Length: 476
Image (cartoon, rainbow, N blue to C red):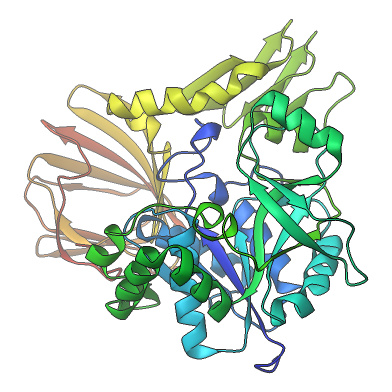
């Protein structure tokens, strides 16, 4: 374990929504939890990346309480169960999130540096990232807020910019003259031509007390709200729930607006590796491995006379002919088709669907729960068919439904079932019927996943028709 003097604590800011990647990313399952560029999710890649400059330190993760079990599952896959999770009752952007993390870290390791990283970024070379962090350590210890800048390769209008005050010193650290938020195309072109501007990666290395002092100087209302939210936090198993009223009362603000545009303590280290926030299909296309025709194809895809296109199949075969510079994304419940140059407009489209209260705007076809997941296979008048998978040792809550009955058929594994006063053991190809208003529970006692097909019938089949009597995950 590193000493308190040289400790670096990874702080993972995991509250993004990723609506510009709809229908892949949804409010209930945003992009940081998706495996967009390989076998690991963006969150998992970030966690592993942070371990190199901060060995031996469990990460501190700030996330929305609705995503807590998703985070825990992905941590367990990496063997990082020791991480601390601070749960936000509502999203309030990065300045309040880093504030509660800094307050929590300062109370435990006052001398530690915080390495604050968004959970949804893509970096190609971890060794270059590690080297950049190490170049910034001395400046951060001396009281600087070190931001990592990326030399721009195009006049990108989706990133903030940093203007340095000249060449880097021997330690690789530059002074910062100003921060500029997302510019228009003409301004971005001037920034690129000048050579004095860098993309703002949104990653920081700093002492907790320095950030809190700057926040108190430039945004004291955010510091007060964060302090109250942490002071009133309550422990919930492996989670720490921030006090809801205090945190919800905080205004939503980014670190850049709240602190970085005002502070005189900013310094920059160049991050000399390809980087992207994967905030759009354009950036996802650029990060993918293109074919000879300049396409990026993910999943079961067949292309004929297609060029410059991003085609993503989540479950079904997707075939395309004669497309140019097009985005095609298939998921079990939605399909997006758009010219690549207009793919940014998907954010407004997703907002429109949410206003229409379409479930496709917010909830993915496969819904993750602390016990596993379920997905809808078919839906019709007075009926719904689901595929449900329970992890080994997991169970549903003891519950009943007022408006629907359920038929369960085991297709894999072994199930223990409570049905009213009955206790049943079901194996593959065996089934049971759960009448309306009957208490029931499903448990997986085996070492392998349990998979069942659930057929629901009734007047109302919504997820809110659940009365819970007992739940090991603390859900109401």
